[in-house]
Length: 62
Image (cartoon, rainbow, N blue to C red; front, top):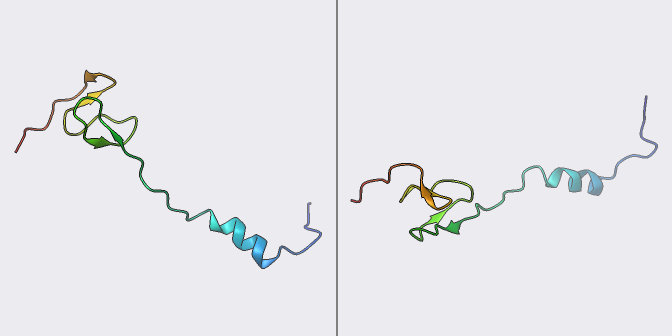
């Protein structure tokens, strides 16, 4: 069974753990049809378009 030859330092241990809880901001792009910000690879919630065609009915305007 593999056993570490040297003790892992606090610095190396903490560097390894630091990436686990890293928060990445949500990426937004402008919808090519209406210009509203949408997440990539999702249908636009305001106009219902995805990849140049309507895939779901748009929400009624208030």
